[in-house]
Amino acid sequence: MAIVALYPGTFDPITNGHTDLIRRASRLFDRIVLAVAANPEKTPLFSLEERLSLARKVLVDDNGVSVEGFDDLLIDCVRRHGAGVILRGLRAVSDFEYEFQMAGMNKRLGPEIETAFLPASERDTFISASLVKEIASLGGNVSEFVHPYVAAALAEKMK
Image (cartoon, rainbow, N blue to C red; front, side, top):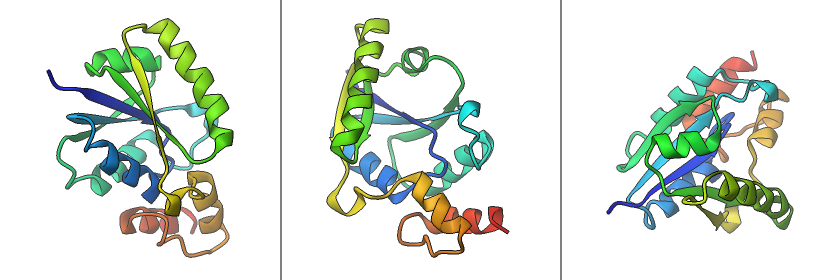
């Protein structure tokens, strides 16, 4: 039986930290679904369609990884994709409290679903989509933190 993990997030935009986590997780799981949340209350810089397109371009060579959008309850998305695991990344101890609370709520809503936490690689612990957007908005070079497709899309958005 294949073990499917669903990695949810806004991915506004997808960063090298996200892709590193996916590539490391793909050694642990048979298939990974990158689930891009519509999340309009966060007022993302990129539309859902743009975020899906960027993620698909960045992950095109990653076998066993698919990219899907969702705008419903996470646990419903997990079930729809036949996943048994919610994958979450942790950059710092401060992430743990929120993620632990979410894992507990998701366990109540879907007792059959597990949550797996992977720590960020040491070189990626400081990367966040918010910081990348801030650097790009101020004209900074973000090429070290995102795929070239994403860097180009950020530059275009910031014009």
